[in-house]
Length: 329
Image (cartoon, rainbow, N blue to C red; front, side, top):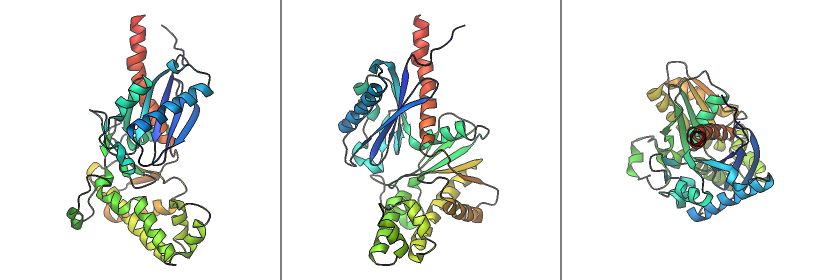
């Protein structure tokens, strides 16, 4: 029998977004101790990103007066297609300079610690199960990212490791086959990603067809919540919003038809504030699916990927690093 000191070492979890990288440091009890973030450019190189990661670790350890060697491992949540076997980012539409790059190897060399890397939506699905739905075996987490990405994290039969669900690549109709989407965004991402919706709304504002949304935009950058609020007054905005939501609904209907999950969770930019969007998606899904389907908005927000990543990282660290040290003793 032995007891384990939860503060003998620490874990770091990174989250890459379109314009920033966030990092959290936690002990082995998965208690979050501190967070730091850095802005990044969309054309950032692999080497520049690795430098940002090193800056973040230095910032966190210095803030907590920790030795860098006390950080034992790290996990990275990526909003893109990750090759789990070779640890390569195959495609990340929002940061195309990282396509086909081995981020894991670069970060391991820079930080000199083991690194886990996976799709953001997979971590989100795991985080939702652990924190909110431990009694649900089959979960699909639909991730609408801030810029153009659309993905899904899939947990089947309570499995710990999600299977990639690249919703952004779904074909909507036969005309979509006239184009190639492999290099950047997938078909659904091109047609219904938030970047496309934002461009359409900006054109409507410029043409004077979206006065309510235009008034809101004067107070800051366009976001999805503004669009959702404006649809009750601006008919043109409601039309492009509805077109986008219909395409999201088609993707959700397709994945329900194939996998029949117990629960579908909507996340990314969507959260508990977006009841209108949930009701509209639910309306369209019920038109196509004849059995009951439970669709929910996330209540965890970005913490879903954090909790999922830390859970997987903690298990990995115990199974490898800590177990090896105990055996050596």
